[in-house]
Each structure stands twice: as structure tokens, then as C-alpha cells.
Amino acid sequence: MKPPRQPDAGYVKSAPRFFRLIAGSGLLFTALVLAGAIFLPAPLLGPADAGAPPNPAKSAWFLLWIQEVVSHGTSLVYPVLLLGLVFLFLPWLPLYGSVPAASWLPRTQRAVNLLALATFIAIVALSVIAAVFRGPQWTFVRPF
Image 1 (cartoon, helix red, strand yellow):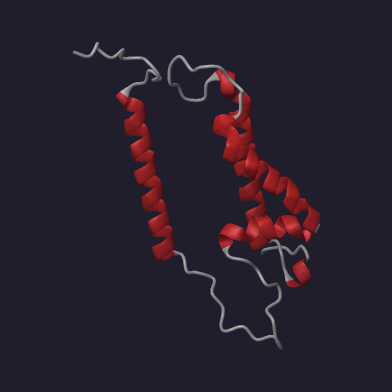
Image 2 (cartoon, rainbow, N blue to C red; image 1 turned 135 degrees about the vertical axis):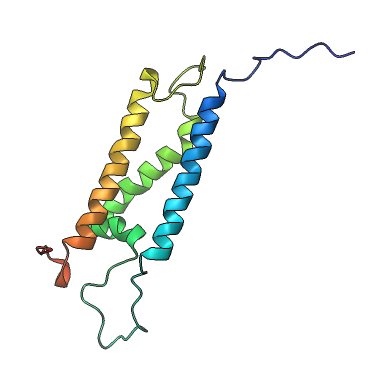
């Protein structure tokens, strides 16, 4: 007969409300993306013509921020790649010890939370600048 398994061996204590919140926010995000895909038209142009390229030639909305970054210098893509690697390996970085219980935005992980929030705000701001404030020859223009 096997000995009874320890209920907290290797697990983080949590509550069902966390899982309900995550599932609900995932469903809401999926619904918003689907609504955006249905109601927002894709900025597709006609067939490419090398003799008359569009001015400015803009990327798809989800790539505009990186187009804005490389418009200031192609070497600026390397910090973006480094930040992507940091986020990729974040679960394995030895930043914190074991977690006693699950919680939203714990104080021990404030640096990671601020890094993620700053990255999100930067991507949104760069996307808005590239989509709204860039005109011919990629110069700044007034949107109105």
C-alpha cells in the first residue's frame, strides 16, 4: 500500500477564484480579439507595384511598434531581442525563492511586474505613434 501523498508537496497553495479570474479574463480577451478581427478592417493594400510603392509603407498593426523602433536605427532591434529573451527565460531565472502562496502582484515580484507593465506601455505607445503620427517619408505629422 502506498503512503498518502502530501497535499502541498511541490505545489503552490491557491484558491479557485484565481483560476476563475484567469479563465474569465482569457475568455474576455478572446472575445475582444475576435470582435476586433470581425469589425476592424485589415489594412490590406492592392498587389505590390515596385514602380509605385505606398508612402509610407506601414506594417500590420501588431508590427508597427517594431517598425517604429527600427526607424530610429537598425541596431535598436538588439535590445528588443534581449528583452524578448529575458521574458522567455523569466520562469527559470533565479530571482526569487519558493512561493508560499499564489497572489496577484506580490511585493517580492514588483520588479518583474513593473518591467512587464513598462514593456506593454512602450509597445502601445510606439504602435500609436507609428499608426497615427507618421506620414510620407516616415516624418511626424498631425493626425487631425
